[in-house]
Length: 360
Image 1: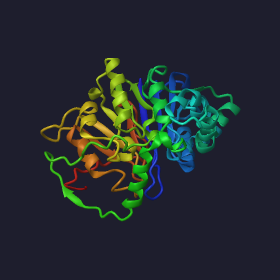
Image 2: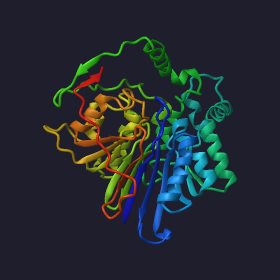
Image 3: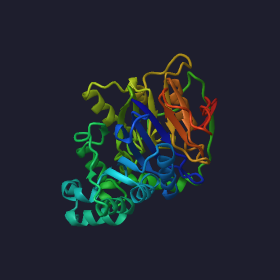
Image 4: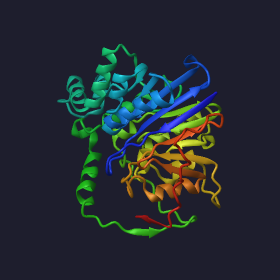
């Protein structure tokens, strides 16, 4: 088995996104001996780039599985282009409006009804609704990706997903009081003066995020573990600490040590709100005494996304735990097995440096 994993360049200005293509199998053989996956599609422009990439480099017009990790536009809107222009075997996506009856008990308000919750999700999550409609029109099977039904999915379980769904922005206020904190941060963050602080290999300033630092939408992200030619790849989308913890718990239940994963995606474009030292120790391993990388981490970040995407202290934290870190930042990134030929016009990527000074 051989593989190619491609992180597309996504983003405009400071807005980042995810669009990933994967091909694996007997890449020198017939198409029937290969599989092609698409994991998120970024924006509409990214969707067009994905279609071109699959056709040009994978030599096919068929995608066996499209995975929509969560309904945010910077991950899902480009997938409509993939569904429209390529033949798709299956679509893996959550259908939040189908869970209204199951989450009604999470709202302490008699005025909240399942039909009302369904309508809220249907009206607010336009990109997910469009994906579902396209799949139905094209007779593409839809599977909800839960850890207890899809083997490669480590998170969310159905129960965990429904807990996060109750805190989506479109849901009634009692279930999402944490959003008040996010709104206050957005208001006062506009006048906040950014300060710089020093870091060394032995001095880490990354702290544990607040319990509500990540939105329900982001924590509903599909965390995917793929085994490609004996190498494991962990795709994390926009998962925060609660989702990553659930994924690590699921992996442990399956006797999978995530610290043995060589290739992984840095969550949420490298945001400091999505990871902390404890979960990184659990997924990557403890801090090393010197720079001796054995892992590779990829960040989907726009060209002008810094210093928020990616956060320098997050990049440093991954490096301390043995990962070389690469970011898209306007260029596509490709990781492929040794038996795959280098593409014409592609060159070695430059890993991100260790930063001696970071934003507080």
